[in-house]
Amino acid sequence: MRVVFYLLAFLPFTASAQRLLTLDSCRAMALRNNKQMGVAKVKQEVAANLRKSARTKYLPHVSALGTYQFTSREISLLSDDHKAALNNLGTNAVTDFQQGLQQATSGLPMERIGALLGGMGIPLESLHQLSAGGLQSLGAQLDGIGGRLVDALHTDTRNLFAGTVMVTQPVFLGGSLIALNKMADIHEDLQQHSADARRQATIYETDKAYWQVVSLRHKQKLAEAYLEVVKKLDADVHRMIEEGVATKSDGLSVDVKVNEAEMTLTRVNDGLVLSKMLLCKTIGLPINEKITLADEESENLAVVSLTPKLDVEAAVENRPELKMLESGVKLSRQLTNVLKAGNLPMVALTGGYAVTNPSLFNSFERKFRGFWNVGVLVRVPIWNWGDVMYKVRASKGATAIAELERQEARELIELQVNQNTFRVEEANKKLTMAQSNIERAEENLRTANLGFQEGVITPTTVMEAQTAWLQAQSQKIDAEIDVKLSQVDLQKSLGTLY
Image (cartoon, rainbow, N blue to C red; front, side, top):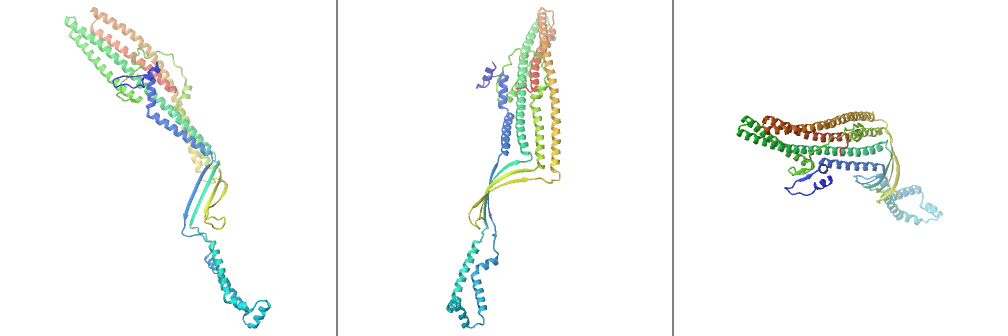
């Protein structure tokens, strides 16, 4: 039957039609349209992505870097004096040779120089030719060689290009990597518990609004029935006044009761309209939507249940609020582990490939050339003036605070479970008494009506019986709603409101 009501709740209706809703369909619509539930879902997705991101920290990471740099001056392997000497290498050599030759032959007669050269197999004409132009040609060639050597050693480092691809694999980070991944897992659980808490709060608000509407609808029917009864009595009393068997005072008293009944009905009608607006807003419908609840026409809203079982441990196990606090304690502990890693060594493996232009592997070339490299990176903290120690102490203090708050919440939950269990028992007792009072009030009203018809009971007595009947009926409705709400409160305190 509930499935039928649930399907009917989502069918399109015309503006004049009533939309029939059950408690289950109201819960489903509230969960679907609640904005905070949407926020909780997005937070869960964010936490899942953060967890996946934390897992990637275990894997090697590859990065690429490229750079271009222009400098106003270039690196020079030769000094200005060296460059000048190489550019004039031939000229200086010829000059030195001529000076040496002149010093060697200084003061010797030409005949002696010719005899010496003849003995060496060198004609004297060759010496004249060498001194005339051969040395200048040889010097020019040597100058060219020196100039080319200077050009070959030109670095041209004003335009520098460099690039590298690096792979980094963490090996040991002081336990911080493991702690961060645990924190990501705990954070994901925390968001799940938060979503559960928001879900239970939404259902709780929906149930309260639902049963409020049902309560006012039953009181509306009760007020209408009471108004009819009072009007009938008013008509009877006025006929009796006309016949002279009743006084005008009796008629005025009944008129006052009629006015009171009409005012009561007006207040109930207004309250019912406002309660339906609240329910529509809670479940995501337009506030002026015409709705009818499945329990509005039920004769008996609640049946006295057996004494609820007190189960504090189940509440501690199921309550999402307590789980959230436990997750907070775990997060604080893992944060302490992250901070402790600041005093521990960190080790990572590195490798990559680097290129430069100009390259240095074959003198200075305007080409991109590179090399492979592997290495080990080790960082060992030596002294930080106790910075990490103070942070660890502060984190441990935060953990102690979170633990105390969790223990306090556990005690409050235990108290809440006991209170709601007692409230359910009391609501069941009140409902039993209210049902007994209904029987007595109806019998009292029946007897008063019979006595009034026989003329042995005054209108005042009948009105008193009607008032007692109204109070008994109203108390029965309140008791039935109180049983429903107390059961909802108990389910929420036990963490089983789904």
